[in-house]
Length: 222
Image 1 (cartoon, rainbow, N blue to C red):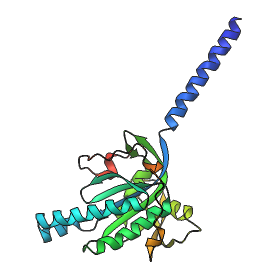
Image 2 (image 1 turned 135 degrees about the vertical axis):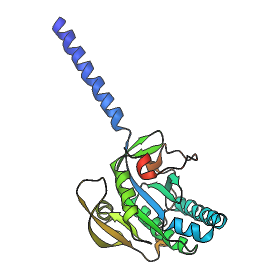
Image 3 (image 1 turned 90 degrees about the vertical axis):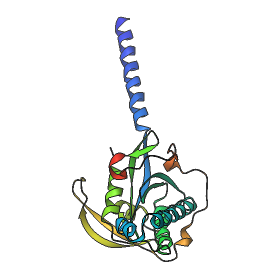
Image 4 (image 1 turned 180 degrees about the vertical axis):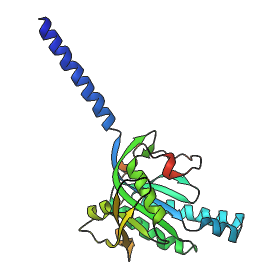
């Protein structure tokens, strides 16, 4: 009898540990992260002056947010002149990036964009983890006006209408090893605008409240 009770208690403890592990896994989400950064923002600020630059940046932010929802994306964070957004569908993330590049050209601006797909930790409405770090690094090394994506993104969207140019192997600061990167090639990306089908799962729990400005590639990366 005593042995049976001990066996049942051991089984109960194993089950409890299993559920605790499952709960920790439930905080992980598979998503596509997109980072943008305005090219030479400091130089443009000095050229235009505080007031004109502030108005231009406001137009940039407005156009980003208006277009983002059409492509099924959700704003995760904004800091200075850059954004972090999340998408369920990698194709929509790349198509949005290409479309937004055309949009900001009308404002006389250029942006660098990085797109990566991977698992992230979702905690307190924030996306954190290696995937976020990689996305930020891609944006930091992209050429002006370039949408730079990881091999993961290129592989996931294979079979669709998106096309890419091989940019070779690169080392990303703080990320071990080399990664093959690709630049998106686009024409007529409006064809990719998806139908809106409710809230994006990638951003469930992501807060839309205004947050203090900070460096997105370090503040929320685990």
